[in-house]
Length: 274
Length: 362
Ligand SMILES: Nc1ncnc2c1ncn2[C@@H]1O[C@H](COP(=O)(O)OP(=O)(O)OP(=O)(O)O)[C@@H](O)[C@H]1O
Ligand SMILES: [Mg+2]
Image 1 (cartoon, chains in turn brown, cyan):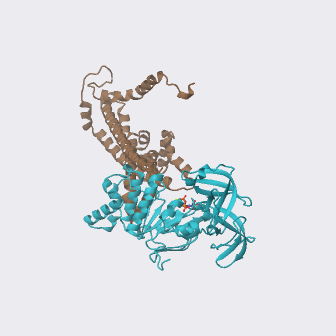
Image 2 (cartoon, chains in turn cyan, yellow; image 1 turned 90 degrees about the horizontal axis):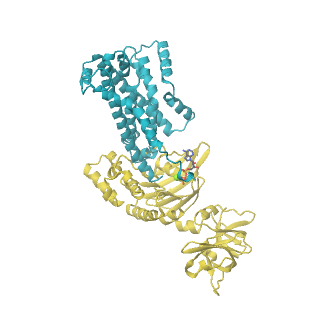
Image 3 (cartoon, helix red, strand yellow; image 1 turned 30 degrees about the vertical axis):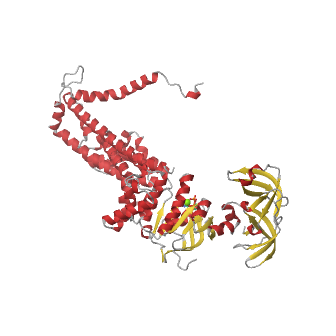
């Protein structure tokens, strides 16, 4: 009778998990390793430790320009998707209205659509409209793409928000605006910060839309793509890639910590009268 | 009823679409009164309370608080404060900050604010937990924070929406005593929503019983228990044995009836009573029937066979089939004399006091 014990654990499971993780992360691990390697080729054995590739990034004005572009795009996209996401998430978690399900589906859809198709269609539309390709067009494209990420973070944050908190505030004499500032904002702030961080990270790492829509102003991933043609530039790209990896991991971890702490707080509160 | 009520509700109707949640509700509540709204789930208690607080707007009718109509006045400018069913403690603030929340708007000087917060916390015996966060409190403690947060505002009226329903039985009973003591101490008008009849009976100066958006009866606990107006009210508060009786005489305030087994009695006429086919519904509470032991006799007794028995610790419910009554009588007898040992199938004699019979409207 295996039913009583559930599915029997296979001896192969740990081996499978180990292989899976290795396949997933080994190539990524190579990146920082070679970025400190004192050779311009990415082959073993390693030729000694150096930080010169990182140092060389500072003098690279094209790279700095791309970093600046990425920063502008990332911050704009984070702000825009989060603001739009707040409106949508608030509507979806608070009100019942016709077409709520399809609306949610449509907002979340870019997550599952082939990105290259979205990019090509956007490019066509923008060209039809006669718009110059620039950072603005990248921002517009990426907002569509980042909105689902922002939304899922915000919805889970707002779902835990108890409407009676706002009523309690009004009841205690606070105005509607005061209530938003003193109750609504602080309670959902972790979800908002989390959404900003996630959108920024997704934007920072996004390539296809940026590639199609950036015109003559590359973001970092587009810049990296351009550099790959030159073998000599590879170590610099590895250093840059490692930095971006580090930043992404830091931001996502931070966002997850904030989200979990807020969720714990709300969950503990809800549990008392569940 | 004193001449100047703290709360006057006049002809209030509330529609949700075509659904009538409040149906012509009129009610006066005196200053300093502990008033309860009692009724089954969905009868409109919360809707009425929220209309007083300002979160719901009546479709028709007027609500006056301390003589002032509050129709169109937002919740933050009403002299009422509310204890929410789920307490709605602000999760990002600690206990003291929660209690001080409303005071911040009053721009008191810091010392005065601290003094009032401390006093309010002392009042609900939470002085030692001022720095705790909401999620570090037990259900009973959260309930007290909600109370302190509302009381510190010194409202004219405190509204409580089932504040005790989330607590376990023992804590609930403790908090009931505390609530009553607190209300006496502060002298503020309390309006308590509950669906627990014992809570309403134990705490209130007066109770309004609601069914389907309408107020069925408003009276003191004793009146409402002993002289329920309608069959529904009687049934909701503790249960009652009903029987059909023939009306032999009817005046403006009294009716005389001939009951199937309880003889002829003359009783008070309930509000809204109309005889149907010359019949009235007469009721008697289960605990007003007493088992007669051995050769004890009473001038007023009925006899029948025990068909069922339910043991409740200090009391036993006997179900006694009386020939000539449509339904067996439910009898609540203390176990001091061995009611829990009466075998099912035995014949028992029951004594009653004719004054315990009441007429109820259907
Ligand atoms: N916003 C609303 N929209 C539509 N119907 C509503 C709304 N609020 C309440 N109702 C309906 O009005 C009726 C009264 O609701 P209310 O919340 O006042 O009941 P209640 O007596 O407090 O019940 P409970 O004891 O379950 O809390 C219910 O039938 C409810 O379904
Ligand atoms: Mg209710």
